[in-house]
Length: 90
Image (tube, rainbow, N blue to C red; front, side, top):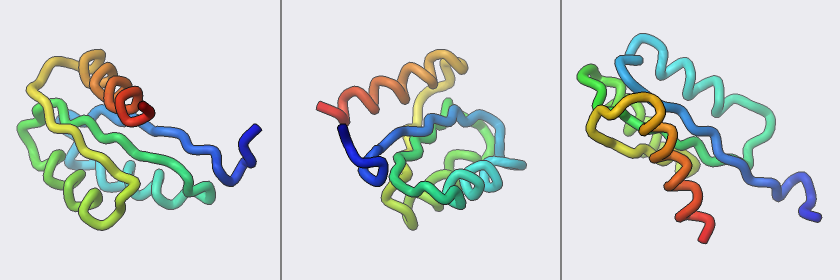
């Protein structure tokens, strides 16, 4: 079994019209004591600056991946995140 320090997991966050609180959300994840994770942010075609805010964080932390998609809804955004994780694991 893997040692706890090597356990990697992904946090998937769908993003749509979240400019008021996406920065706080990302900072909360980054400030956790356990640091071995990937943060997948799926910009679901948000018309506000949410996607740009996500990119700002991704430029400074390699654990963050931003996926930009046409707006297809929450379930599609979640599926895109899961597909990314599955492909990355191969």
